[in-house]
Length: 98
Image 1: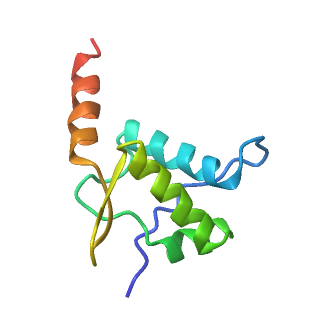
Image 2 (image 1 turned 45 degrees about the vertical axis):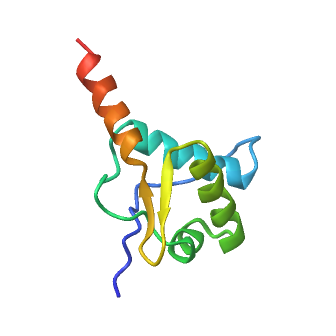
Image 3 (image 1 turned 90 degrees about the vertical axis):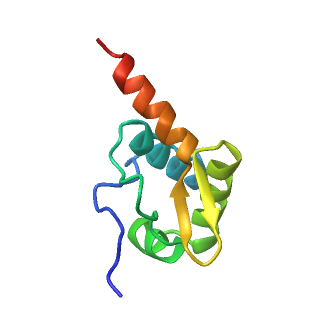
């Protein structure tokens, strides 16, 4: 099975934020800027943990926080997806820009 991890997702070199919060920041920024496909699952916890060289628990905690913030939804046996309501919001924000 091939990895679906977007290689442009990178953690900052230096940050005062926890790893969990850095991952949340990177993913939420990519969602808001429409850099992630809204119809495809996000990388699995394992794939993203391997890419960022962090534990799977750290990625799971970041995904859980993003679910709580309504950026993501979890679909059983399918993975993590951008919340459809967030998709509508980012489309609205983009169309509101003159």
